[in-house]
Amino acid sequence: MAQNIIEVRHLSKTFGTHEVLRDVDFAVREGDVTCIIGASGSGKSTLLRALAGDPSVESYIEVSGSFSCRDSAAYLPQELPESERALSAYDFFCMSPVFFDQSPRELGELAARLSLPADVFYSGQLMQTFSGGERVKLQLARLLMSNPTTLLLDEPTNDLDSDSVLWLENFLLSCKLTVLFVSHDEALLSRTATSILLLERLRRRQVPRATLYRMGYDPFYAERGAAFEKQTRIARKEREDFDAKMERYDAIRRKVERDQNAISRQDPHGSRLLKKKMHTVQAMGRRFEREQENMTAMPEQEEAIFAKLDCAPLPADKTVLDLSCAELSVGGRTLCRDIHLTVRAREKLCICGHNGVGKSTFLHLIRNTLEKRSDLRVFYMPQDAGDLLDFSLSPVELLSPSGKREERSRAGILLGSMKFTADEMNHPSAGLSGGQKAKLMFLMMAESGANVLLLDEPTRNLSPLSGPVIRELLAEYPGCIITVSHDRRLIQEVCTRTVTLTPEGVRPSSFHDNF
Image 1 (cartoon, one colour):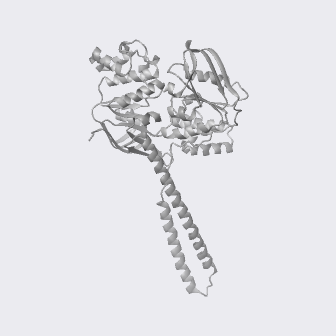
Image 2: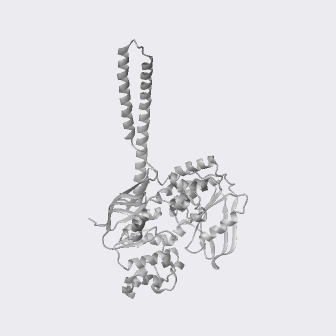
Image 3: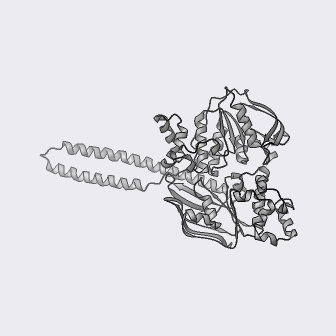
């Protein structure tokens, strides 16, 4: 039987009066690849950092319970620390004492294992100039030098292009280490995870809960869906039965009350009988109240996205975009040349390409071109919500620019459907998690009535459990979509066409060309 590598017992974490984690209890066995999933703000990164022994966690969060990691664990943060971004690759590796213990042969084997150039360890190239995939590989290389038994990875697919995502997937399948990671990439979860740790926040996001499922992502998702449907069915049946009983009870109670009011003072015997009958009716009411308290709860979907993307459809043959550009550059550096792209009204186009080729820059160019058009309504969703949202405003204010009472009331209803608490609705958006900001942008998108959507990695900050809902919304949307994404399921289920941005321009491609 496999040994437990990670053990967490009754772990609770509190930030001020806010419970981040409550009574988390689970174990990760040797060789397990466990993915932590949950809505933003559920404590995924906090849990991972605590297991990694990050001292900053306990500086602002109260911790109780215990957690341990047998042997050695290596932690890959979501972002390369700012202090290390300006280092050369060589200086980056020199920060690890074990680097100097590595022989040339060992470094060569490690480089080959990670598909890195053999001389990268002595490179003077700055860390911030490497692509997202290269930075992940370099960080993994430094971690693997210490021969850890466990890898703790926080959103390792962020900033990875399609080739790097596939490489990471194959690495996780072949590394033979115990892995605990956070990810929103459903395809990655489906292929690599052997167990799922679900972190939830229930009862209007006030009560945290953690559940470990020792199964892959696909059976977990199917089982969770079946359990949700079963609980919903039972809860609805109980409520229907209860309503029927209450209807009969109310009829009896009203009749007894009428009889009591109508009885003659000359009939004391009849009055006493009616009083006894009323006591029985009241006892019945109290029993029904207890039954109601013990009824099966309606299940919650914390990750649900309740929005409808609608617009006035454009003529199918209308040309939304006909763009030609001799050169795409940023900061004086040419990214690609000889760009030509035409998009029709009913198309859902995905722009793929390697890191650093300029996909987000290209999407900005498309945005600037389309927003000049009076015959189109364009909505742009950036990777960074700060490019769109004024974080000093509350979600209610962002959704009700006029400030009118009816508009604010509707904003509150919309936000409530997305599981925003009253506090989150009415305080500056700067305090929202990445996933909540993404949900807010989806609501703004739904309210915009736009017939052209420009989306830069739209699923980046959302729980994988939100993925199917997002894909259904976008697939049914009657307008035009132009997106940059490496989300394989989004591309397969939503996009009608893919193109690849290369240094030589835009090239037709297929899903299989990119993955």
